[in-house]
Amino acid sequence: MKKLEELKLQSPPSWQTERLARWLHEWQLSQTIPQGDTTPPEDAQSKDDSMPASPTLAEQSNDTPLTPGQIRLLKPHPEAPDDGPVFVATLKADSENSVTCIPFSRFSEPATPNELLTKRAQTVVRVLCLWNARIVPLSHAEAGWLVDHLTDQEIAYFTHAFNSVRQTGGLPASQQTLGGPPLVHPDDPRRIYLRKERMRISLYLPESKHAEAPSMLRYPESGTRLPDELPLAAEDSEDYTSE
Image (cartoon, rainbow, N blue to C red):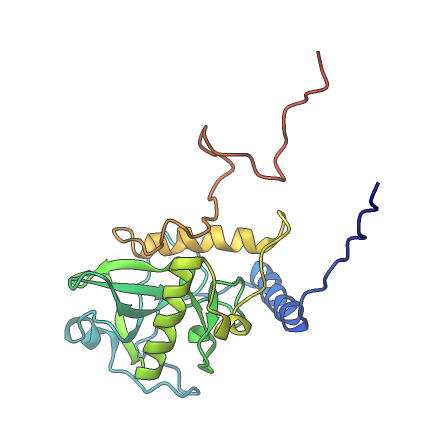
């Protein structure tokens, strides 16, 4: 009998382990330190970063329609968890009457392979959650306030990444080191993060639909599954040893 080759475990790249460690540190802090009041200030932009100052939110609400190529601050939702403000980037959608809204993460590091570093310095717009994108009508009344415009380079960069995530569930090869490490362990806290973020964004954009292709990996929001679905590896199975 031919001897089986010894299995060799391959260590993940150092950038993945370092990025995961930084993300886990932020996650642990977020579970112990209150985020504070999510009500936005009159000026949507802080004084110490590089984003241009915006007019007051009251002025923005009527003068800046929802269009592709923007960064917008969504209006607070009374039922949303106290996890800070929600910023989104807008890209063109398949329909001329709608726009793709992609939320930014509340963390400064990508959590999964379908989140992307934007190369912007500000934490609130540093990471784009491509997996949590929504298609929203241009007439959407709760789209919030304009904060900044995307550059042509950013639009091309984000669109390339988003199309890859829709088709394959991950970033293109040229951008993979700008994403997060893969999910492996069933008890990884990033699974909790994904579930909570999907539910949170659904409160802000309740009438939109997920901008996902059927081939994308779906993260279950509960422990239930349909009758024709196969069980997960970590789930308990029936005892076949009994008579």
